[in-house]
Image 1 (spheres, rainbow, N blue to C red):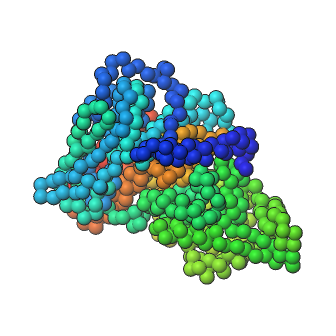
Image 2: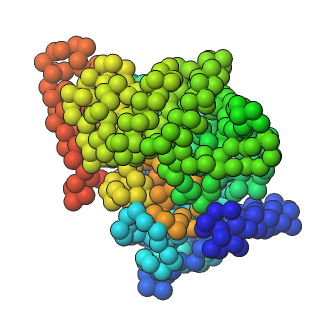
Length: 592
């Protein structure tokens, strides 16, 4: 049981009770849609004024850069939306619905996309109702926080999979429209309509235009952007009410892994022992590798969970690195079963003591042999997270001496990477910039260099109160600063009831996750993916322009470099939505 659960024991039951209530609701009335009730808006009394809103359902296009409050009637009057995309690209728009009345069974449908002499099927588009979750604010960033420490509000973030939605009176409901352009789509301008219907209201149709360019974005499996969002399998078991590591648990993990793979994820997050981060999440990290010490003092290691998890990720397309945490757990504790007594024991293996080498040496040798047998040896990195230079030195020395075939990954906030120029995977905190010459050398040697943001980064970030465009900006920053990609903790370390409340007893709201249970995406995740696509488009256009150094291409490359340089300094005072739109127009003009 987690520390948070000990303080609030009933919170552990909340997700299960919610799931039971939804199941009963779905069974009690034919055709009912299983759903949940959002939290009440703590700002509704100060924000809501619907006296000027005419009866009926109102519809307009909005901006994907804006989070629209639930209790405020939006000032929006945009009848048409045009999206521009490469073939193979995903693009998004945001539709706004609002009403002063209660309206049931609202549906949104996108029609077939038609161009002169060509058409694209309607199912390349999806509409998802945006759900509101409780959030807070940045405050001091990292550190424990209690209810009431910071103002609470609602943020539209969760993209639900319901096909219809009941709207309460005096509410706004965004709808996220996603279009996945087929890789073989003929270039041209396509037109369609989004049809909105509801009980007792007139049918509404809004035009949507899609400009498809001739350039092609490769599938996510071929993207160069090194995306490393840390996964947390145990959180899925708890939220879904499943036995940890059961067949049902692994099946529940699969759609989440698939969604992550579709965003270009390159890394499997695995654990070497119990809870390498000293239980700073709502759910502890359960061990994937079970250690046992026999009566004669020798060791046995059960890799069943580890093998099954890695295999599932590889089956779903995450076939890059396997980063295993950690040789340096934050509390230096190791757990093993004493076979002589049958008891679980806990031992502190501080790197400054002989016990560190005593316990880790036999494991590293056995682990190396196991990886070699599975064909994963060249993919596996032993990973460390934000450890001090002296501790890192002891860990690197042991690894290089005992298991030199294993790679090393480091999330670094001490500039320790400078001591070890040959680490396979280095990720630095956003404010700790890697020199251009080091980036160039590492890339030429096939080494990965990324950056990360965390609870200490006010801007840019992917908190549930962050502006949606911040997630997109992060891809542009990576391109401008010369990084190979991005690391973020975490993909799905969910708090107690994530679909209603994104806050946690530690860290700003949304810091611990970016997608929701049931493999439901978020505004933040879609915008992050969008920035990754931009990173890939920048890379491909640069390669194309440099391959044919004509005067025209040289001028375009210079314009691209000037534009990109503006994104290298994350100054929150800059008008980033306008700068992103301008930069995208440049990519579009070069793409033509």
